Image 1 (tube, rainbow, N blue to C red):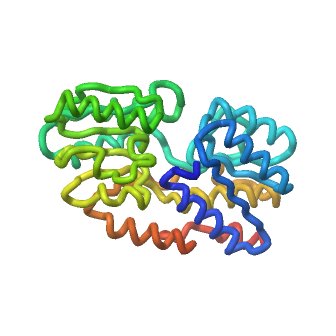
Image 2: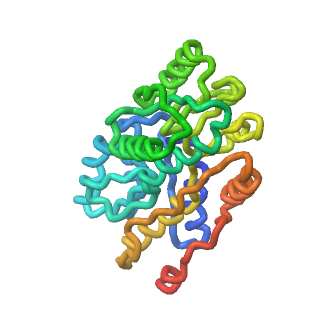
Image 3: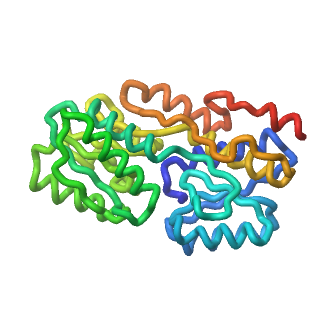
Length: 295
């Protein structure tokens, strides 16, 4: 997950918890590639450090559910963040509601695709339940509006290079296309110049406006991103782990920060929040009093 655009903010949230609670040692490990094998090796490396609780962002829910269950059976509390593993023995989850993300993608597309009315959608089929749920929510929301028309829904398999190839092929065949929705940021991953992905006047709407993507949010480019308080993801996941170790009951085992939309109109505020997160400063004051009283 080291290449995930939200990871720097999530990690900062976790490290902020360690700063606030010096008695806690927080270790962060991000595999260089998004694969279950790499993530399982990262978990193994943390276990060698004799940790007492673990927060994990599953790269593949089906593959990691068994790992989470094995850890829980060994008495190690596990929280999930970013992507839930609802059929596992995880103690809690902090992330976003996939249905809300799908609706927000549709709303953004209606706002950001201003010239013309045709678009295409990139998805990953049914490989991951949470992404499938997001895609279906997006489709339902688009069905309820009348301005935009979906020409094709294309399965990129969640592979960045494949996503970019699909976009290039379809733009050659449909040069007048008005815009794209990608239910995740696959076509932008590892792209040196994100603004080179699409021609002017054909914006993309997707998720996770990390710093590498900010050039797309310029007014003349017109992209839109669905986002959330990623810093809070990391901080709340550490709250869950700390509470489990201290046997403090979780008041909110399922925690969903607000789903947000980032465009050129609020890029300045988003950048300020992002830089604040990197300096371990929360952008909003989450309620922490119940945990302070337990120190």
